[in-house]
Image (cartoon, rainbow, N blue to C red; front, side, top):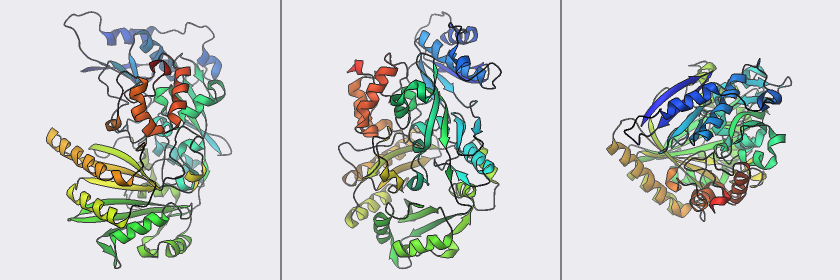
Length: 504
């Protein structure tokens, strides 16, 4: 595979082709480049100008180029991949086996706040770190936004897949706090919520926007945060205060999705020195005195004490969740768009709807010890997540779910043998968990992209349904109907996109 980077106006387009002939006709990437360079809107009432963007607007050229990219890709029968932050776990925003163009949104990154600091327009290329930093500074640390803990995530993909983080029990997902969007559709029109229609706006929130359009920006609703939040991270290997890890995990299952909505406690299971290690990492939207009152009543077995509770600003807690010790780095470190280290990884997901019994935990711990490269993060639901109907947005995993699991394997050395071993270990742990997780379908989280649950190279309904019902459950059929209406030619497609009804 060869690649060419084309710098057109102020957005970067990456073009990938697969050589299929020894002949030398005009190169497809050159044809595409010329198309975007020569592009002029055929309609004098150019929708971008008439919508919101004038030629004096700083974003005008970028929006124009998005429009040109879609038009030229359609003209040349090229597939399009849209990348905001490049964090797609299985690379579907920048990899394919067919010829394609990557529309990289990183130059669309402005953040505009309304004067009352109730809402903000976030362009798709902005990272969560940029959003958090901007919100905290504009509001004097009295506003926040519920989204992920990784500051390098791009808003475009993170939001459209759901967007969850450590405030979801209080405020729900990112999509539950999105009130408008600006998009470019398959016809090259720039639309907002009122002009795209409620069905498409519904689909963009949790259904994966890359199946429907290019999202230019999201309008988010900011949420109040206290002047001080409290965080903690309690790690135990074997036992803590005479209470063994199994007992602590059993108790966590009892309370994690039912405790105060202001409290989020993530449980991470890993191994250390041939022993299972449990980490209870939490954030409470309040002071340590109130947190200790809640913990001593609901989870006394953990034995959380005041010295383990750290009070800080909400923006400072973002660094804590990155394992940056308090006071060792400025909050501006979350503006860094370049990862501190490069790793190879595999991620998978599951949902748990019934408590895992003691015998089940013993079996799980045994499997973890046999597959030491794999960790599991158990993220509690409940609270606001149980109050929002499963049909409110395209994201279906609401009431009835106790917690979501992320399986994670990282490796730092290149090589097929190392990769295969880590992938095999992940699959073994995943299979061992099958008795304890959701069934028919075995549910999965779209933002934890996983090609193992199915792909569709031909974008057929039958192939798409295999992975579609796992990601979207009963919302899959409505997503197919929306897709068939707004993109009947299936221009916006990739290996796990929503299929159209005509493929039925």
